[in-house]
Image (cartoon, rainbow, N blue to C red; front, side, top):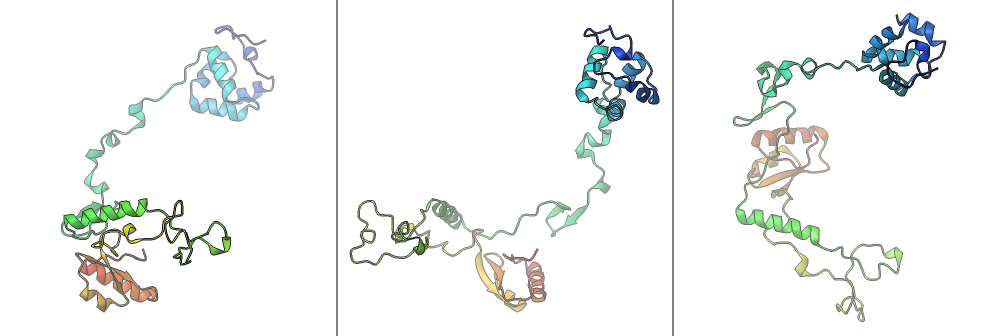
Length: 247
């Protein structure tokens, strides 16, 4: 019979959930008595092996045996697990860090994130770009007249033109109509979100007329892969940002 108090387990048969068939399996692992089992339970690897060999013995049973036998699992110290060389990342050897030179003034580690080229903008333009961003996210969705009544109309915007249209005349609760007050700042209208002025190109020769400080190029959709690669290569040489790169 199993004993509930610690120190009263004199034989293996006294353990809870113990079966007679476990005797031969434990003997193959060199466990024939209670002291041998206590010694094995102190090791996490041997405890795992016992769970694998004994049918019906799981983590809960092993935990109960350890409690009854007053067994404390041996744990490796943190210093033994973590090598001394890895405790201080700042002391890595120079050979472990591969340096990739992107330009004369920019040096980054391999695989590190490299910021994309930014335009040269004045303070006013930066302020207006931020204002345009906020206006775009606060602007309501304009829906055409009676879009909710006739599903075939869809949600595309169409100007109300009816002579008696209440929406056209902005009467009472009718939805808002597209008007000039919802537009963004005129100075930054049409600029890329990054602040660049977009220029369409279809061949490498057109890059000679691009100002890399304020303009970025977008390769035409009809350009083939080989010519696109040539455009991107020349753009990198001239320091021009390509908005729709292949990779």
